[in-house]
Structures are given as C-alpha cells and as structure tokens.
Image: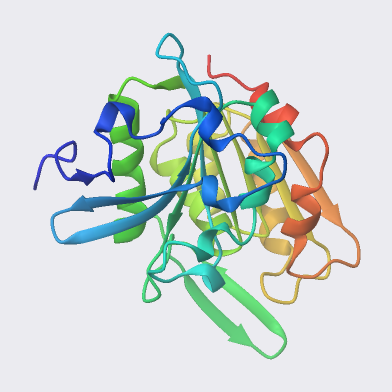
Length: 271
C-alpha cells in the first residue's frame, strides 16, 4: 500500500497548505459553492473525490474543527460536484463561516458503490434493511477513514472537534463509521438513515448524536431511525431525535434549516 500522505494529490498546493490560499479569497456575501476546492485522494488504484471548504481567517496558530458529510445515493458519481447539492450551502453561508470556522469535507461515492455495508429487502409496501457488522467496510468508506487520518496527521485539525453527518445512504454510512471509529468523533448528525443497533453499544457513551427523520419517509422507513435512537438511549448516549410529521424522504431540508444544528454541533468537544 502506498503511503497515504504521498498519495494525496493536491492542486496546486502542498499538503500542509492545501486548504488555505488566504482568508479573503473565499469571503462571500452569498453562499457560493465554488468556495469548495476540488481535491483528489489517491490510494493504490482508488480515487476518493472530495470538495473541501477552508476556514475563514485561517492562521497557522490555530487548529480547526473538521466536519465530514456523507451524501445520499442520488449524488454518487465522478463529477466531484453532485455531493454539494444538499448541505453545501449551509456550511458555505458567509455568516456560518464567520461564526463557525471549520474544515468541511464532502467526499463523493462512486455510482457502483455505497458508504455502508447493508442489504435491502423489499416486500409489499415495506422496506427493510440489514446492516451486518462482520464484514469489512466498503472501499469508499475505507477511503474516507484514511482521508480523515491524513487530514489529522497534517496537524491542522482539532482532534477533539471532529464531526460526522450524512443523509439517506450517507446516514447509513454515518451510523456505520461511528462504530468502526468510535474514538474519533465528538458528535454526529445522521439524517433519514439507519444502522445496526448493536453498534450503538460500541460508541453510545462516547459522544452525542442528533438524529433526524421524516415521519412519512417512503424510501427509508422512519423505523430505522427510531430503532437507532432507542438503542442509543439504552447505551447511555446523549441522543437528540427530531421527527418531522408529514415529511417524506427529504427530511434533510428540514434538518439543515434547524437554527440550533450548527450551534449544537460546534459546542460539542471530545473529552
């Protein structure tokens, strides 16, 4: 396996400076997704496409929170753009960037893969998911983990403030990544996802989780989140749950509009 530090291809800056080209460059009055830099993380023969938002007013005297967000199945591909469709505007908003300076990473999953190991069974009007925990992670999820490790090793990340979120397929990936790396994160916000409730025992007491779902979700049944919330409670987790009546599978729109989401997220710090 190649050294992951050397396999991170940056355009045009070197590793320690790839996020920042001066605070004023990306200062925007209105959200502008072009502020997310195009990046490629190469390992062996695999490529993880990413868009990365730098913190405003960067200084080498500080370390910054890291947010990793996993998109849904509809945003898979290789254009390194679709993953910003949902959630990109929230973090690039000028007021949010000023108030919550952070490194924000949106990786993109290839069309033929997924963020999580799961099986889908559909019978009649019901959809059931199984989440085995005895299999290795998908290659994209493993690449995400390796990429996070690379960012941390660069010395610019506040390791006590690493946050993870995701929607739909990314919500599945979020719940899986939490138990695969239970000591890494300070907080998480899975949206309309699901996971293996047994995983909650591994990470439940380590950090708070805010779960979101639409009550009328016809793609990922709300039961998936309800089961995880109960499992987190049983595991002693500090769990918040917001369920939106009448909302179907696009509950991320409501979640991103929650005025307390970012203040809650950035107030969390790993012990």
